Image 1: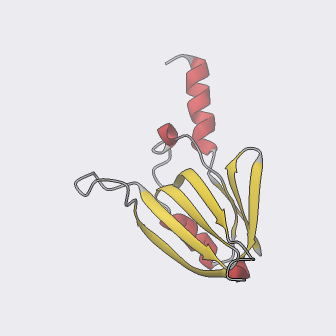
Image 2: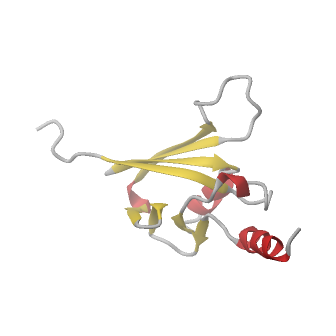
Length: 127
C-alpha cells in the first residue's frame, strides 16, 4: 500500500461522524455548507430501525434513525447508530455529519453516518 494511501486511511480511522460534548442543541450537517440546529428539549421521540429501503433478505447492518423534533424531522442513515443514542440520552451529542460509506468499517466500534435528511415543519400548516 502506498504511504499516502496508508496515511489517508489512518487519518480517516481517526475521523468521526459526530462531535460529543455538553450540548443543549444538536447540529445536523447534511453537507459541508448546510447546518441545521435543533434544541434537545424539542425532541419528542426517536426510532432506530433497520433501513426499510433494504430488501428483507439483505444482510443486517444499515440502519435508519428518525428523530422527531417539534419543528422538524431528521433522518440519519448509517451503521452502528445506537452509539449516537447513548450520547443523545446523556445530552452529549453536539453535531452529526455524514462520512463516505466506504469508510464505514475502518473503526468497527464507532458509528458511521452515511446520509442525513432534514424536513422542517411548516408553521403555517392547518391555518
